[in-house]
Length: 147
Image (tube, rainbow, N blue to C red; front, side, top):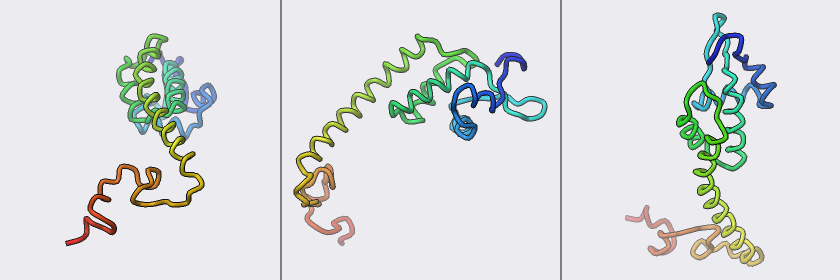
């Protein structure tokens, strides 16, 4: 992590990154960030964590789940500031996930446009209310509870 003089307190990290202290603590509990403790048992973060926080925030804004962000950050060496090449590799991986999410949202939007005025909310037919309903083949009611 570097020397104690290079380390940032959680308050300094929050001020420099624009992220609340509570969010930084949450990220650490989720395994996204690591800190060391000083002699007074206070958290200290290496300066590389500033870039990691930036990567986390951008990925979150893109809708990447925290578990995927954690897995991606685990591919980076500890104590090294993520580079442009690191970001390119991570963002290429997330691009496919983001493209799939955009396609699902576009399809949902298009279905919503076609359904907006009908008011049917048919449990048997409406793809918005009951998508991919395989239980409908067994008829109305609670088919899995019937004896």
